[in-house]
Amino acid sequence: MRFVQHRSGIAGLLLVVVSMAVCGCRVKTVSAGDGDVPSATAQKSDVQLRFLANGLVKATQSRIVTAPAVAGGSLRIIRVAATGSFAHKDNVVLEFDPSQQEYNLAQARSDLAQAEQEILKDKADAEVQMAEDGTALLKAKYAVRRAELDVSKNELLSEIDAKKNLLALEEAKRALAQLEADIQSHTTSNQAALALSEEKRNKARLAMQLAETNIQNMRVKAPIDGLLVVHGNPNSMGGIMFGGMTLPEYHVGDTANPGDTVAEVIDLSRMEITSQVSERDRPYIKAGQSVEIYVEALRNEKFLGKIENVAGSTTNGFFVDDQQRKFSVTSQLDHSDPRMRPGFTCRLVFLGEQLRQALAIPSEAVFERSGKTVAYLRKSGAWQPQEVKVRAYSEGQAVIESGLQSGDAVALVNPEKRGSPKQQPESTGPALGGGSSPR
Image (tube, rainbow, N blue to C red; front, side, top):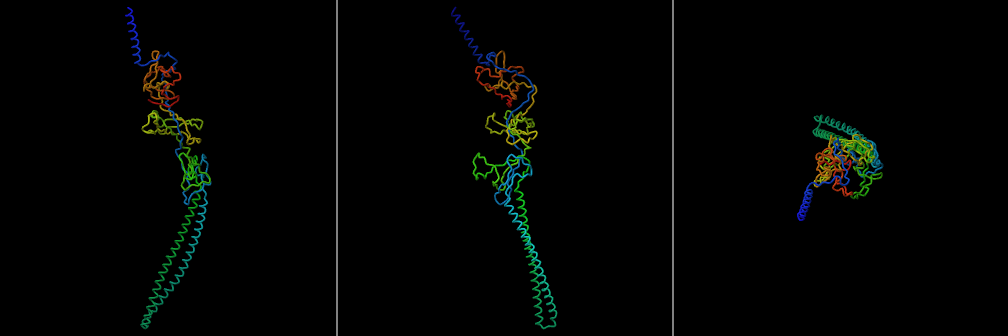
């Protein structure tokens, strides 16, 4: 009898062990009463999707301020407006030493006066030459006429005298022809001399106009209204530059080559904010959506704007984990603010879709378990992992697409690790107010 009872006890013990093994092969459950496990209830409500990002303020339009394109070497700065000052259009922000151009102007004026005097002299010489040629022409014509009269008397003269008269007529006509050719040459020569003097005058006038223009260009004006930013002077280091070196700004006394960029005027009325969002947030962010902008330099003052553009491709390389892929987002302010400056950092809240009666739980109640997204659901007095599909995370909430029902109680910490108070929960959701991570 004892032997039978002993065998019965062993059989019962084996039955208990097998039962425990079978239970171990099934879904692991944790008693809801074991330890303090904070929980929350899945509820339906209207959810505004909100996605956080860091941004940088940039200017959409700017104009460079360059040293004037003036031949003759480098230019010396005698006045430059300070970086950060506001430049009004057509106000002088940069001025160079005009001494060389003033000298060129004086030289051009002297050349112009000399050319004008040469023109007067050439005209006077031409008039004198014309008068002399006119007198000589009259004499030559008179000589021809006189020789013709002498030839008309040849019938009454001897053959020798008649021959002499003919030779005299030919000589007079030859002299007249030569004189007429000389007069034409004199006229051409006088015209050429006058044209040369006039060309000198025109050249002097152009040089004078160029010098006057260069003198005006020595005072460089702002092309638009905006913030002035003076650039670094590469000549200050003697042409030697190293990576990461910060160049000192141009200041009074520095020299710049014609065409060098000395400063830049940034249009503050047209600013944009560039930011990046994760690949998981990308489907929920669209152009035209509203965005809240909190500028850190302005004590996190709130500005409103609109998303202008969302990049269609990632800014990261192809062989990058999905979690690291980023898409560029460009936002515009609804209203410009004169205090806004390029380079300001800010926090952006993109206002996405408004979900009506969406089922949501705290984002802390979502965990990763064996490669699956789960929430610990309370069933029959125990916590059981339940696979869920998360549509989006927004403001500390996880919007559940499937896996839970309204009224379900879920654990806010991993109940399987409740025995380790210092163990951090394995929640995959972002912190309160964090961006979304659609699944």
